[in-house]
Image: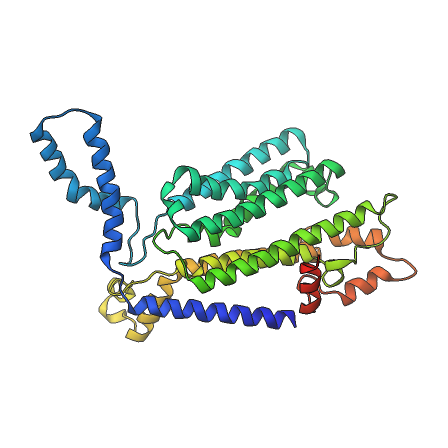
Length: 396
């Protein structure tokens, strides 16, 4: 039931994306909007230069003559990727976010090698998301603050990151170690591999936002933003409540847990926190989906221009490839939910970590067979009962 509902939501979002895509393909954007942005930056540079020193009138005229047409051209060619007349792409946010992920995970690797501690793993690995979106948006690239979609997406990622990072850090302070990672972090190669995966997780998982932040001229589709915010909130609440329910369940068994957590959201999914995480990032993807598609006419990539006459493609094939090329950022952003699903499914099924083996050793083999019945009847990640999921998520 729940999977059918998600298929319906995905279908609606896909139709909205396709509608926006084809609308952008047949309409051209007035060049005045882009020119005003570039001219504004050019005029700002000229004002700064003219006030920095006192020069003669002739020199100022020469400087004005040189800077007015050419500076706009240099800005548009060096700072921005204007591959279409409507969409303005600015790649610096993506580069800065990648460098932040690399730097923070490098610090985590260094601490792990020196101390062998597990306490800092999630604080740095998950907390890196907040810095990777907040620094470009609010500190180093002020122009992003004028785009409400980018600001909204940044705040969603930052709130989720800080919430989860501090919760996992608090939990690590209480339990001191994570038995699921003992074998992995016991060796140098395992430690390096863990932080490489953490870095890749940060880069790929954040693609819906980081790629969306490169489109500074698109404020987004109001319907897609609304659907994205709703899915983000549902996923955020699902993940937060499931983590809280399991933590309180542990505290109520001071002598050690003798049975798995099967209360609340955990009664309808073996890993509702994974489900909530997938849902909130799907919301961020839909929120930025419209801005990941290039638009405007007359500037489509034409593969036939690079092929000899004897090997040129049919016009219909060339058009299809051109349209796919315009949506390449959207296809790249789709790597985020696909990668996370494979990662979560690997963890939940025991292919990546030994969590399943540890759970069987701890809860399995009891006379009542409660654990065996639970894993057989309860879905691994996606709940089947949508009404039960919404009730468990939204009840107070």
